[in-house]
Length: 205
Length: 214
Image (cartoon, rainbow over all chains, first blue to last red; front, side, top):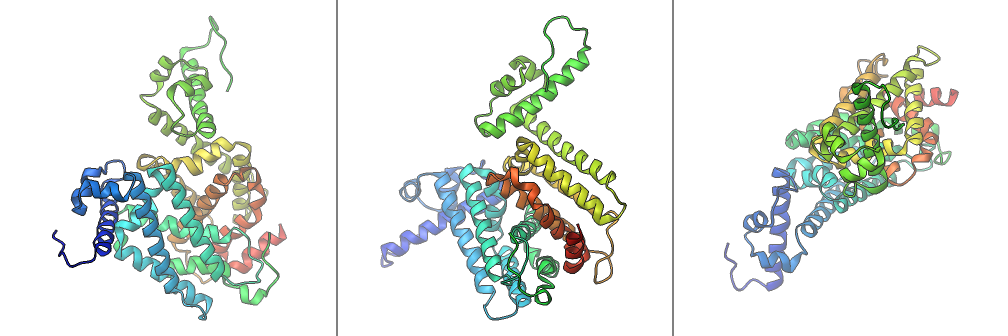
């Protein structure tokens, strides 16, 4: 790939960084983290080996950066999806819908984040858990306030949605994720269903 | 796991082999819990199990093979405990049987933290070869849960994916709590886990009513 000389240096550098991040996502999704070699990454990203080491400490550092990018983009998509102000049902359906669309549109980063990260390295497993934690917080913020729902409910809901999606991704069917929307909405809404009638009594500890 | 007496003991070779194998499985589970996967070497497993390195290789080709066997043993003992509790529940009612199984699960995990960590944390971290077993275990819990479950509050059967999401969700949540070092507090989560599981099948109101009634 040739870069025209008039492009600013920062733009070129950022573009190369992005290509390396995309390359490791594609490669780990295809063949797993273990089997992915630096040589494969630089070839796929069309960058010099030195460029990779100028930007990252090595394969794991690049992998962790790619995971961080993927989780930030996935979360941004979900946050954008659920606009504040609408009803709980609408927000949950919109947020889940945005998540499923993201997975269908970006199967490789999704697989890297939701499947490979768990077993690749101890640091990537921690990053995965932290990213699950952020989705738990996101759901908790969006959930009805002042209700006496159990403390662990959002962890179980996020875990359940994650489990369904992990199985789908492992089967190589990320593209059909949006079809799961009705069942997942029903699942996530079920504990909140009668909250309005119960009224607020403070979340149980 | 008791170490067998040295020298002449009149125990059959099959008995000795089975005992050794069981000691190796619990040796690996314990070492993994205390030292992590990388540090859990064949030598360390042998040391915990009081089995020589050469005897280790009579049972397993590698640490990974021993890990798989230990993982299956962990899942099996959880299933056994839950099935027993379910069968001896005080009533035939589906919700009571589910409650008995969940209570037994939480008690077992707290009583055996190394087994808890193996089953719900280390298994999925170990990679693709163990994933299939984790999935099979969760699927079998989904089937058990479905058995005798009433029709959904809206009428008709509760969708299959609901059961998978419920079981996968509880397993993931327990894994997070175990990772956070809260294994000893899991039994306190009994009412909320029960309510969560029942909600998917009975609706939030009915689940709340049953859990409040104790």
